[in-house]
Structures are given as structure tokens and as C-alpha cells.
Image (cartoon, rainbow, N blue to C red):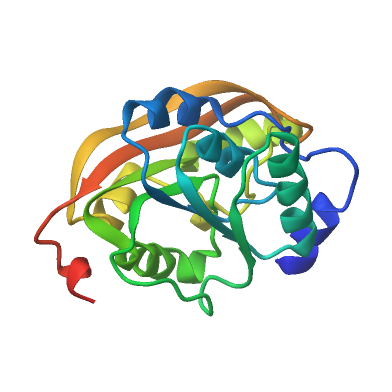
Length: 211
């Protein structure tokens, strides 16, 4: 996985563009800025956007090239982000320390997908938000007809509403939908795709908040 993302991010162009994800731009400004964690953040377009809104931003990804470009983008936009390179299973953040958890196209390997979500939830404060957009299982047909739209080719890496409900069961759902969107994000998200969009708040008495 690391080699794949190093190859994708090791170029002058930003693989998914410099502009933030549309769903994030529509969602994040509705909430009061605090501390936010951006998972699998790549080249930093979404983290930089959040920092520009006044959020204190931490981010992580597997790729050193992603970090370099994220920091370059942050400098260009005159903001700062705390970016760590490493595997999610070895990274450590303080429990209950973030006001928002942002997962934008964070497609983890199928064998650890749920455990990654559970680990990330422990970093979120009770009452904290999760903002999520990723490809649904119905996206595979779009990828087959138009490879430029991107996304995993492994069905088990894609998401369903049922999986999201299960992984984030101790959350108050604000929005949870599957929808088709026309993507125009850099060179690798171009065309019609099927996505899950999810906004939720961690319940105050969540079991995860005790870890």
C-alpha cells in the first residue's frame, strides 16, 4: 500500500487536485472549529481547507511524498498542519482528544477496515463529529465503465450503509446516505461515482469514550 501511494504522490501535480472535497466544504463550515484529525489525508487538500477555517489540524498518511506536498500546500495557503507519516495501526493519538474525525476516501484494507474505524473513534471526544465520504459498493460498476473515476477495485474495501452503521454504532446519525456524484478531483477522481456520505456525533456515554 505504501509503495502504491508513494508512486501516486511522487509527481508535480496533485493527484486529487488542490481544492478540498465538495462534501467537506459543504459540511465543515457548519460546525465550530476545534481540533480535527484527518485520516489517510494524502496531499493535504482537505486538512489545509480545515486549517483555513480555524481548525487545529492533525493528519496522517502512509506516504512521505504526500506529507511533503501537504506541507507545501499549507505554506501556499498560509496555514499550518501537524502531519504524521505512518501506518494507522502503529500511530498513537491521545484518547478523547479531537472534536472532529474526517475520513474522505479513506479506504483501508478490507481485513482491518472496521478495526481502523474503532481505533480512530477512540481519539474522538464524546460529542465529537465524524465527517465521512467514500465510495460505496455500488461504485464498482462505475469504475469498470470509467476507470478515471478511481476507487478500489476490491468490493470488500468499498462501503455499505450497513457497515457504517455497525462500525459507528455509538453515534447519533445526522446524515447517512448513498448517492451518485459527479467527481472532478485532480486526475484520479473524474466522472460519475457512487458514494456514502455520513455525518454523526459520538454519543456522550459511548463505550469507545472510556478507552
